[in-house]
Length: 86
Image (cartoon, rainbow, N blue to C red; front, side):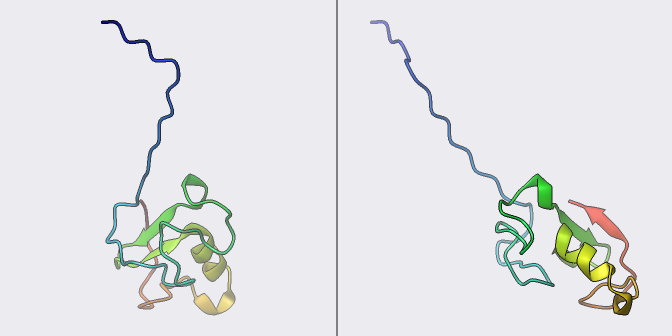
C-alpha cells in the first residue's frame, strides 16, 4: 500500500515562558494577548522583565519610561529598572 500526501496544513501555538495568570503590570492584559499598541501578539511586542521580576509588554514599558514622572523606575515596585529581554 502506498500513501501520497496531497496537502499539508500545519498548525502551531506558542506561549511566553511565564505563569499563565501573569498580566502586564501597566495595561493589565495577559502576555499571550496584545498590548494596546499592537494588533497581533508575538515578536513585535516582546516581553520585558526587570531584575525585580516584574514583566511588561515592551510598548507599555517604553511608554511608561518615556514619562518624566516614571524616573526610570519599575511601575510596580519603584526599584531601578534593569531589563532582561525574554
